[in-house]
Image (cartoon, rainbow, N blue to C red; front, side, top):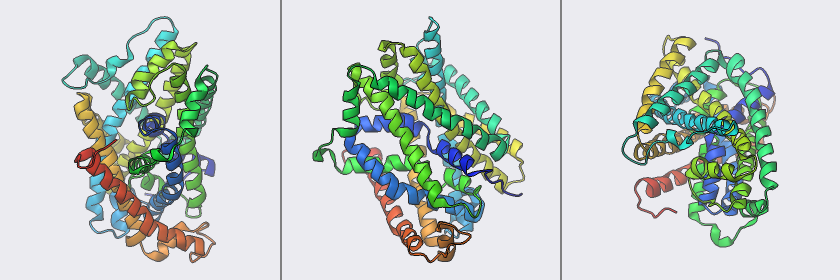
Length: 448
């Protein structure tokens, strides 16, 4: 079956930014900034996004474009030992991760509805959909099942239309709207009395003592997470790229858009948090617990709360569509299933995988750490190794060239980029993966 490609560079960039900008930017980035002290984390993150994120993104696109396959097939076709088994392992991990991710999007949609209800003079408790810390809540489970099913159906509407008529088209609409809403929220936050203190903390309050190994490791992990690296999403979307498309320009624009969304989210959140005297370092609950209190106390807060959760839902939705596309393409590439059959089968299986993490946070958080952070870091490591060591040197250089159709693959910049991907990128990812394993999983090294 012939591989679809993007219709335009604008569609390509909008889609890639839409894939990267998700809960990782509008939810995870702000709370990571809060957890790791503000400006120091932001500074390190920006640096690592350029020196590690850009080349790692190019490597995954190179792998997809060269093989014209998703992760199930790409590693094998590129010559990585055990590549087919690894591809199916990543397929399973994405299935499990898409389940809990769809559930989290359901939380966001429910919070948006709560803001709408409050705006109309009624209201309900948005936290009713959140799973309990431990134990079991039948009402929370019922709400989560309902809204997760709606999220999955929403993804199916786009997936069934394919790349150009579905994914690319919806991305070119939602991505600009996301940035527009974030800008409106930034302006509102900056006009609140005391909001400037949040900006100062976010960008300017930097002390050398704030910069430590934990901050660097957290920032690098956030780069991997927020850019949707992991040998899955970006490999599939790379398989849709034209042979003459410049990966460098696309990677730079994607990283700038992705990072810009995270910064705008921070500017939308922290001025309001500081203006109302709340705690910026409240961790994962920053969005679902702290911000609803902010909107309750802010003039016209429910309107801005609706805008915020709508933007968050849109960002997360595009990333969820990308996750489903990884699975649909995996089945289409390796079975006789057509897109419609594969999409409905994936939807049913993902919904089943979504149920366990709905029960309580004692299941949800380890599920996230394992199938999200753990496998995503491992997949990014394998993808960089594949391009740097398994793919033939000549083909890797050709894919990484500024203009693969005309530029000599032996140019100095291309050769330096290839060496950087071969040695530095996998080394950096290996370090952050090891740190995550020691701190978050094994608890051998004390985490922050």
